[in-house]
Image 1: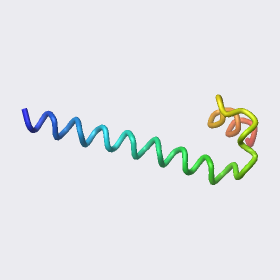
Image 2: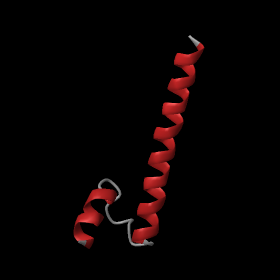
Image 3: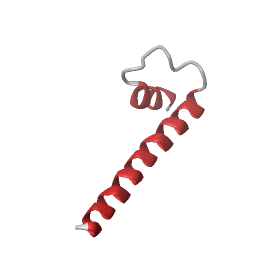
Image 4: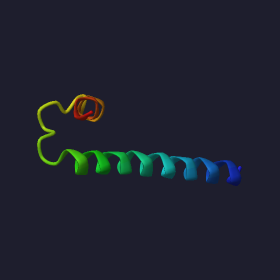
Length: 50
């Protein structure tokens, strides 16, 4: 039981950390002009920048 909870906690921490890292990297790349489309800010801005 404890091993399952421990593995689930590690997976949750990794997922949250990955999402936060992606958001931080996306904000650092965009700068301050990302407030126009907050709904699709990650994919749309990356597609337009290329």
